[in-house]
Image (cartoon, rainbow, N blue to C red):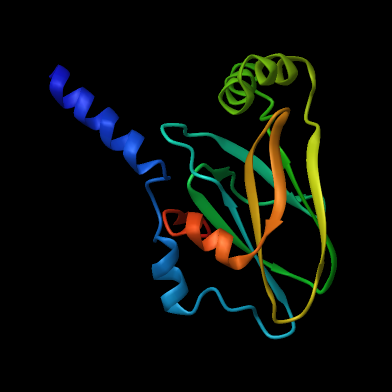
Length: 167
C-alpha cells in the first residue's frame, strides 16, 4: 500500500498539471483557439509548479470567471476590443484555504499576507485588438500571484502541459 501511495505521489509531482479537460495542443488543433469575428481572445493560464495544486479566482473587467484557474490549467476568454483588465484574487473567503494558498505561493510571507489582507487583486491591463490572441500568465511572485501578458512563444513552452477549463 505504501509503495502504491508513493507511486501516485511521484506521478502527481511529475505531471504538475490539472487532471481534467483536453490539453492545449488538442484544443489548438480543434480550432477552438481562434478569436470570434471582431473579438480578441485571451488565453489565461496558471504556470504549472512542480507538486503544487492551487486555484485562484480570476476577474476580467471586474467580472469573476465562472470557474477558478488552477495550477496547470488554462481558460479562454472572448474579449471585446478596447482596454481589458485582468486580475486575480488569491482569497476564497475560506480562511484556512486562503492561508494555505498564500503559503504555497509565497511561503511564510504569503501565509501572513493572506491571513490578514482580504481579497486584494493583482491587476494587469491590456489593449485588446480584434482578431488577436493574447496570452495572460499567472505565476508566483514575492507577494503573491502575478498576472502578466507574455509572448506566444514563451506561453507555448509552458501551456502545452496545461488542460482547458472552459468545459
